[in-house]
Image (cartoon, rainbow, N blue to C red):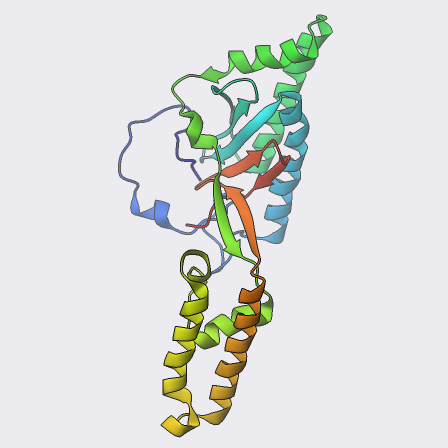
Length: 250
């Protein structure tokens, strides 16, 4: 799993091989995942999420504004943008044989933490210790925008409302980008033409469609949305919220 910038060591850019488009676990990169899933197992998800939670202590110590975690078969990388700079500092750790990304990330965190404490033991201030570590890891050729998360707005729907969209044959994106009030009316009219009993349709099916339309009209009266900040291809950390977000769905 790669962010939209490359891990060290750098290689010439080229078109991704066909297998990179294979659906992979966002926690370990395994291709052994079921359709519609993002993780190969619950245990794999929990291990990485626990390690990412562990990293928050280091990120807060480094006064992190944004961070990104990504991995390849051979490396893991933690890219950090502090609050006082737009430059990116990259922490890299080589994945040993058998090391899952979560394991390698934990070692990276511990190594960086030990280095910070070594600087503090020399009576260097907390803020200067953090600044010193970040300056040693600065990569000036990394675009700062590459780790600033995109905001992904999605409608907040109940299970019944999601079913209602299916009955009306409306994509969920319609509720984000379109005039959803008018689109709901249009969808209901189209489905009524097909399923209304007076048109030769099934009465029970028409009742489902009518109920679905009423449910969604009720949603439009007080529409609710949720915003998720994330990056394509890698895990994203927002220092203002002290929260990690999984990669955007692609």
